[in-house]
Structure formats: C-alpha cells, structure tokens
Length: 326
Ligand SMILES: NC(=O)c1ccc[n+]([C@@H]2O[C@H](COP(=O)([O-])OP(=O)(O)OC[C@H]3O[C@@H](n4cnc5c(N)ncnc54)[C@H](OP(=O)(O)O)[C@@H]3O)[C@@H](O)[C@H]2O)c1
Image 1 (cartoon, rainbow, N blue to C red):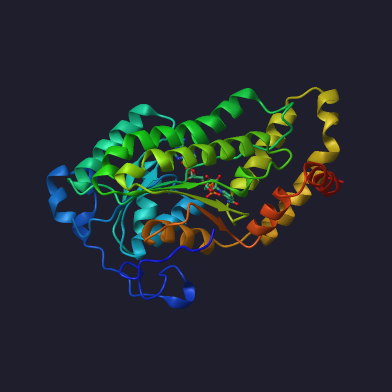
Image 2 (cartoon, rainbow, N blue to C red):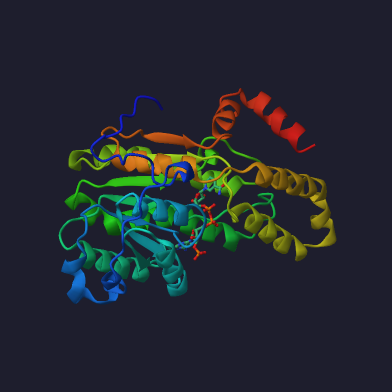
C-alpha cells in the first residue's frame, strides 16, 4: 500500500478535481465535437497522446473519474451505453472528452468501441483503461433471482475481461495502464451482498495474475478499492431487492423480513455518511501517472476500517456482522 511515488513531470500543480485548488480549464475546441463519427478528422484532434478509456462514465464514480481526468489533461474516451448520456458528459467536460458507445456485456458493442478508439488514437495507443462499469445486487443468496446474478457477473467480471481483451492491443502500443475499480467487498464478504462480494473478489484475483502476465510489455495493473461513495448504486440495489421480494410467497417473504428491514436502515446510514469521490479520482490519477503505481489502492474514509474487519478471525467477524444485523 505504501511507497508509491508520483511522477512529478506528469502531476499538475494541484490535483484538478480538488474544489479548493481549481486550475484553469483547458479550452475545448468546438471542432472536436462528433469526431468519433468523423474518422477523416481524427488527425486534427491529437491534443495529447494520453488517451484513456473509462467504462461506465454516464454517472456515479465513472463520470467523476472521466471528468477529472479530462480536466487534468488526459484525452478521455468516456464509455457510455446511451448517446444522450455521452452528450451530457461531454457538455460537462472542461478538457478533451469524447463519448465512446460501449456496453461491456456486448461483444459487438466492444468491437465497435475498440475500432473507434483505434481510429481516434491513430497509432498512439492508450495510456490507460479504467474498468469502472459495475452493478450491485442485494439480497439473501437463497432468494436473489439467478438472472440478476448472471447479469451481475456479466458486467462486473466477464465485462472486465472482455473490455480488457478488446483494448489490450491499444494499451500495448503505449505501455498503458489498467485500473480495475473493485470495492472493499473484494476482500471482505458483507452479508446480503454475496454475489457482489464474489464478483469483486474475482476481479481482484484476475487483476493479480494479469499484472504478472502483462509485465513484459510494461503494462501495469492496479486495483482501486473504494469504501462507500456517494452514488445511486446502493439505492438501486435495495430497490431491486424490494422488487424481487414482491414476487415471493408470503412464507419465503417472511424468512428474511427482519434482516431486510435492518439492512435498509444500515444502507440509509451508509448513504448519509458516504464519501464524495475525491479519494477514488486521486487513486485513479496516481495509478495512471505514478512512476511506480500501487498494485492496490484503498479509497475512502471507511475503507481501512473494512480492511481491519477483514483481518479478524472468521468467528469474530461473523459475530460482528450478526450484531450489526441485530
Ligand atoms: N458507490 C460506491 O459506494 C462504490 C463502492 C465501491 C466500489 N464501487 C464500484 O465503483 C464502480 C462504479 O460504481 P458507482 O457507484 O459509480 O455506480 P453507478 O452510479 O450505479 O454507475 C454505474 C455505471 O456503470 C454503468 N454500467 C452498468 N452496466 C453497464 C454495462 N452493461 N455496460 C457499460 N456500462 C454499464 C452504468 O451505465 P448506465 O448509466 O448506462 O446504467 C453507470 O455508468 C462499480 O464498479 C462499483 O462496484 C462503488
């Protein structure tokens, strides 16, 4: 965890996403609008050769990461599923940012996105890939719908593998870096999040082996593991759980009634103290620019506490969770 050195040549005078430390925004030439659909213009937009792809940039952490990197001088290809989301994030950007239509669960979409990125980068390669897109699933393992579990793994695990496979040729051209957005759940299994825990644990396992596999090309792989951040992800997870409970028989419904109520309360509490996104954007920035990036970044005020809990003997950790769930 310790010992990462920032590359002073690349680090801006102040981290650009810090509210207290604003830099002058880079002017965005009007001519870059719609470039991805006009490959003839690609040569014009080589403002820098530090191209980065961020998946799941329509909202939440991915949007913040994409905007922060664009503000700091990276040329950002912001992965979104819908054109209107792409337009919105492009309008919000104060640096070079272009939407890249990309659904991590669709091979066809990924092939098209990689071809677009290849045209835009025009032989310069990618300096980074931030695998951020992710979904959550709450509920007792006994009752979560299998289709929802399959979708979770398609996005959080197979999606990361598929995106990485598609963009590796471009990353290799520039000895770019891969940053996988995990969660504290990659190291600690929180009850009623079994499938999410398992998906992040898988993501961390594959990041560790990938780091060694890609070392010959100087491609670094880092994991960023945030604690609770202020986004809609938990509210959506709880809403889905409530929806899926609605179709259960009264007997099954009753089985986890008390825990469901308790978890809702806990989530409301977590949401009220969830952090702003600075620690995550800082970790991603460091992973992209430090001469020796960390293999793993914990991000957020509660992350270290979760790691302490992860290191408890199993029986003690179980007891702590049981008392939390009342
Ligand atoms: N928020 C937290 O407290 C927290 C903590 C630890 C880790 N994380 C991790 O951080 C990452 C971002 O989370 P968040 O809180 O920012 O979530 P969020 O606000 O719900 O945003 C999720 C993003 O993923 C995108 N996405 C979902 N399915 C996709 C697919 N099939 N293809 C492409 N994009 C897809 C969404 O796009 P659409 O808008 O098109 O749905 C959206 O941009 C996730 O990997 C999450 O596990 C979050």
